[in-house]
Amino acid sequence: MRAATASNAEGLRSQPGMRTRFAAALAAALLAAAPAGAQDWEKLPDMPVEKWEPGTVVLDGKLYLFGGYTDGVRSSKLSNVFDPGDGSWTRIQDLPSAITHMNMVLDGRTVWFAGGFKDGYRGHTIAEVWSYDVDADRYTAAPLLPEPRGGGGLALVGRRLHYMGGVEEDRDTDSPDHWMLDLDAWAADRRAEWTPAAPMPAPRNQFSSVTFDGKIYAIGGQFHHDSEQLDQARVDVYDPAADTWTSGPPLPKGHSHAEGATFVHDGRIYMAGGHTTAPGGSKQVDPDILVLSPGGGWEVAGKLPLPLSSPAAAIIDGRFFVAGGSPGRSAVQADMWVAAAP
Image 1 (cartoon, rainbow, N blue to C red):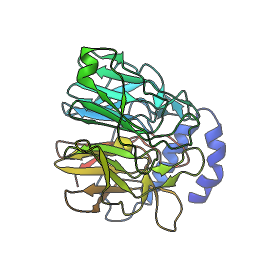
Image 2 (cartoon, rainbow, N blue to C red; image 1 turned 180 degrees about the vertical axis):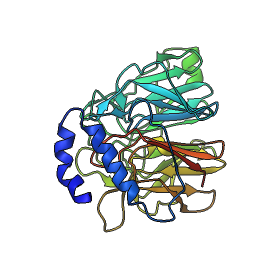
Image 3 (cartoon, rainbow, N blue to C red; image 1 turned 60 degrees about the vertical axis):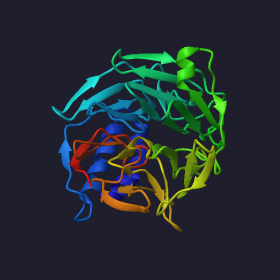
Image 4 (spheres, rainbow, N blue to C red; image 1 turned 135 degrees about the vertical axis):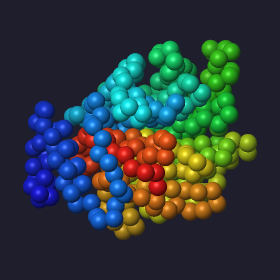
């Protein structure tokens, strides 16, 4: 099965309408090969549409998914919300543009996102910034980033939105730039703009970013995007009070591509799936669920049902949900699972 899948991969990916079946076949093969003792996952009905690298937030006990790639590695405007109470999916307002490689930040009942890649797998880098009013189901344009960026980090500390890192317009040069937007100033005066803050000590892209204990954690990531894609194990922590960066607990291996599956829950940081490069190894799709507790180091708390790049993941009511992602070779799948939270 594995040899046949590998030999036919390029042919399947090049044929319209075949890519989703290729992703399903690859996912099934990987699931069948899952080691004994892996997390006890329950298969749920598929998502309404396959998604890879979507933006995610959790609000009112529901999982929101914005944009990302669909079949054929096409950027999508489609956005949906999943209600684990009844297993339903509801389509919400489409994104203003078909965007990937942007991270979502929740501010009360407003979702913010910035930058990204627009219009496909080889799409161009953008400077767009938007907010989404959950109750009004409406998007509003906000001040553009000072320059186009894709795959950077986004975080909210207090009333200031932070954008850092990512790649420049060539989609490969990593930027150290770090900008802030005062949301109260923007609400009071629509002429407010992004202002500079301390640059990232190690510029990179496709790292996970969360606000944890009042500080921003930039977790993993990779050097370069369209060329080498060198996974990194470093974690950098930004203190907004001092406007300084310090080193955080490093990951056990180089890691990227888990932005929509990294979140804070019950005082711990969770990160699920992604790409990984072990010391001396080659780049692989990762099955691990990593957890960081205050004052400790990263631990493997569980395993996904199969290795997945850039899925959507969240813990809701004590259950760990994982949806979509890519099992490898740029295939996009719509499978969804749930298990007890590790």
